Length: 374
Image (cartoon, rainbow, N blue to C red):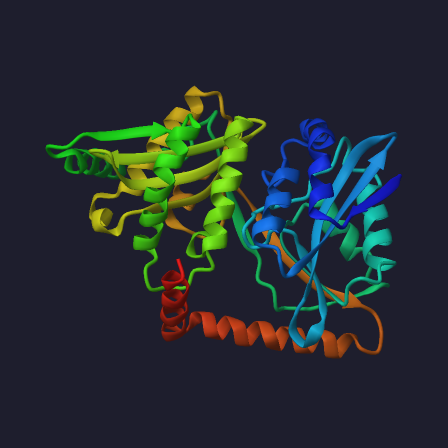
């Protein structure tokens, strides 16, 4: 097993071809945030991060990927995190072939145990059945873990092959959807469409940014679309994935006005429901629910087998999902005399940051400052 680590964003793009071959054998845990995503994320949003994308190669072929980045964080600590977090939702790191392969164990030993480029590791959104998680937790001889500070959250999925038999809307919900579609239309034309060309994409993105702004106006949400750099990243990655037939951008329009959208990515028969929003002016008419029903129908007609809704206990996810898996967050550092100080300081920092985010006043002030810069 050979380990290669990429420390420059431009070099990451060279992984695209071997990654495509690797992704087929890694299904169903294929990431939508592959080399193209990572390269563009580092370019637009990763100025405070140093790339550290680890790869394992077996007989000349890519066998496993661990996309990390190093950030100087609280008290100057070098914090190892997922590259692209929180703007990506990986849920797992892919692996090739049998789960019993030693790629994860080798990478954990070479990158984490022996590595000297990090002080603290904070990896979020790892599947509870992940081989990576198993390999890390097996090294309690080398690491000290934060206990009881990282609540687990579910990722929800919908198997479209069993829909509408599974996750079928109730009679009341079906009635409400028909009612919402009638009211949305009124004397206007309601149109569902999926963007298919560069011209369409360039025309619809400003409307999508405006819908997102109206939906979250005055609140800090940590969203990509609240900053000029984030919007530039969305434009860039959407165009790149459109060229690769991996973009699925669906909109619900009322007389050409976008009232709801869902920015999704599609790989290996899986649709990643990445960033949806609706115009709050039409909230009472459930445009988001109408759009989701159209997406489910259209996806099945296109041969898409599964929709990944991502993390979070939202009602529509729990109602539609046919399965879920717990996603875990693990925070750890290397064993040593400084371990209690490093973990204690970092957890105190996280608690203070979370308290600030939960403050309505802070959210509104931060949101207005960010939006005013756009």
